[in-house]
Length: 111
Length: 111
Image (cartoon, rainbow over all chains, first blue to last red; front, top):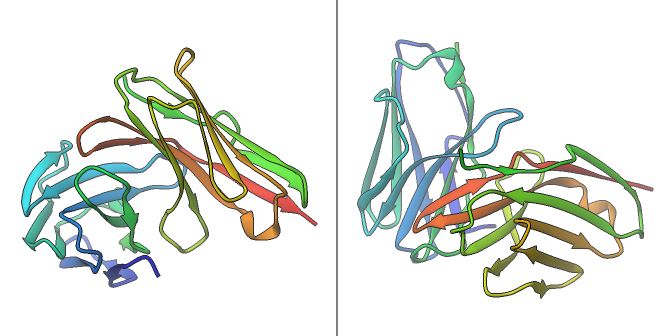
């Protein structure tokens, strides 16, 4: 158990749907991250929040919208996604900029 | 551009042998490096880290070597076991909250 949980674990959605991914960390960390993991590609950093403020945004399409209501929770809101957005979405947390602890990921399929 | 790459996509070793997984990084400003292990259906799991002011760090059955001259990182696993079968990838930290990950090497342990 990594102390970082993600729900749902699997999600299938159409291109016109709106869905949200949820991440919760139980480690008392002050930073949280969203990553995208596609087959045969390195992990891609999408968003970083530190003390509930966004500190990194790596040119992610606006159809992905993050939300960090408190230091323990992180959401990724999805709308009008494309099939190429199908991937494993990983959440991580860390204390400051140190070692990251990852959740199990949400396997997203966009039809 | 910035990149962290792994030279061998698949590494097969006999059980009991030592494994060496290599990684090249490109950003000389990186001050912190991490090796992760990812098993099927799970999120990445921290194995060992090293800071740029060190050349070597040892953990339980694992050793990380850092050669800043050639921007090279390696992970050595002693007495490889079936449970070590997974994808391993390295990450570098060129800036606060900014992590760049390698593509990964699949380690297969042969009985």
